[in-house]
Length: 215
Ligand code: 5RP
Image (cartoon, rainbow, N blue to C red):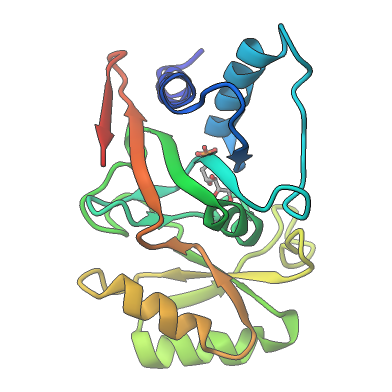
């Protein structure tokens, strides 16, 4: 296991051990860090019970959501969606009393954009991607790129049938709450990877085997 994987695992195990108690309804995000959290949950639960899965239409209120992030700033604002999932993750997080972020040390940053250079993901309705690109670049600056599949055969299509725009080289000294609200008002924008004032706590595994937490 590399030191980065070990750091992800540390943060994931601590979050599960500290924040999940028997009987909790738990939301789970996606990514390589969350896999360690699921393994830990399984270790703890599967021995006695089967790990039960549910849906938000059956259980719309969750106790805790555990998820990874691409970047976390010192105010616990997040960039998520680097792996292409952001809408469903934001829905699950919004249904949870607490959102706990688990990450390795490379995700810990003072300002959004300091560490993660792949941009802020924005999920959009396919027919609107060009007008949205133009509008964001004109009004807020930076560069907005359509995310392409690794094969370059075409754009990435999300689980919800949408495209993803990655907003790069944005200004950093801005009111993220305000910008997020404004982006969501653009017709065709479905959701953004900005998770503002949603996370209660973030744990970062370090390369030396220690952990730091914020929140
Ligand atoms: C997926 C996400 C992930 O949570 C984020 O990309 C972090 O992933 P990882 O734990 O693999 O670094 O938002 O779209």
